[in-house]
Amino acid sequence: MKPDFTKGLLPAIIIEEKTKEVLMLAYMNEESYQKTLETKQTWFYSRSRQQLWNKGATSGNTQKVKRIVTDCDSDTLLITVEQTGPACHTGEHSCFFNVII
Image 1 (tube, helix red, strand yellow):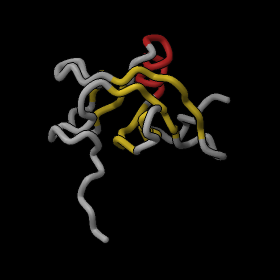
Image 2 (image 1 turned 45 degrees about the vertical axis):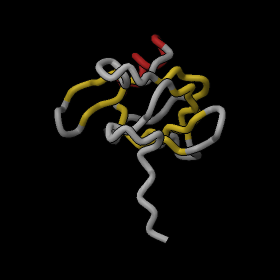
Image 3 (image 1 turned 30 degrees about the vertical axis):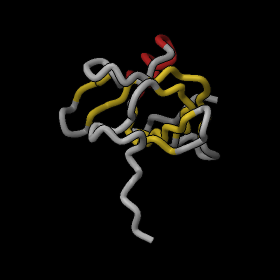
């Protein structure tokens, strides 16, 4: 099933294949989705810079895509990856490390 990009950017939830830990949330447009399918590496759309970016292109902390599924409405992506290095730009393994409760 193809994701529905008719409403714009789709959230992409990235999880680690080995641990099933949620690593990050980013956004994809149709072009970044196609590049991800072609290269088997994650590509996203930066809302702040308004351009595509390849995860790990500068940091070396790459994400090899293992599986992509959509939710029931085809408007959210769940991407399972093999993570190399930390996923978060802060150096943390996951972007989700600020515990509230």
